[in-house]
Length: 308
Image (cartoon, rainbow, N blue to C red; front, top):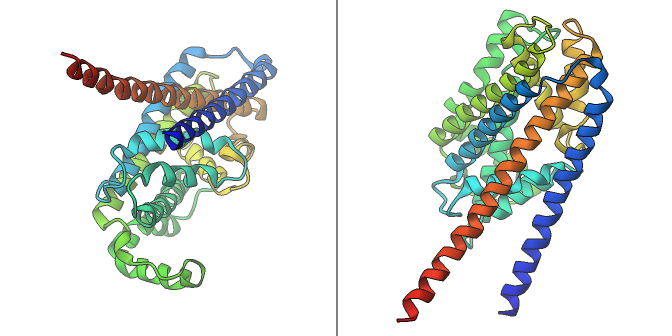
């Protein structure tokens, strides 16, 4: 009973810290929005639509994680674990979210190595999927041969999945020791996760384009989606920064400065980050509340059965 109480107290403390951190960043972003409000009127309707698109993107990413670990039988609901780990990405350092995701998913004893391997695959998928938008990005548009080569990278990786895995494990053996290649997801699961990750980028980028279009810039949506995906990837690779704060904004200002003034691009970026954080916070709170209700319901039923 004592261990259960301590575990529950630790869980409540961890959840409180993560929610409080998310709320504090939301407050900071609202303050930044008020600072740039003089640039133009804030299109709150477009922000609300962008928040819905961000919720869809988050769920797509959670389903991508589900496909990677569904054969491992490590957790009853990996999608809920993915959403529960989201607030940790706003903690500086860059490693808190993936570590939290692995810990929350590997609920069954002995599944930690397999879940950790799936987490590494998810990180690689995210980086490759984001980079695949480079051919349509302004200022960074690639020549046709280079663009086709970049687009072929994911499919080449899938075609030679097992040899690639063996090579990576052989190179990394001094760092993490002997690892069985069978712990990694198979080719089909990786393809499913990659498709869902692309859908997540398109959904997030569409929300960004929705807000950007409200400022009357006339920029093509496809270009805006590509620019956002590339900027997101840059922020993703900027490991020390929480959620890529600063790196993503700077990249978007660089890519879109020919379509709008830097102040407008910054305002749109902050509005979209606010919409994304709001969607993630709502999903986080809803899933936590649903878990509490679900855990309480069977207890009540058991008491009713015990008492004739």
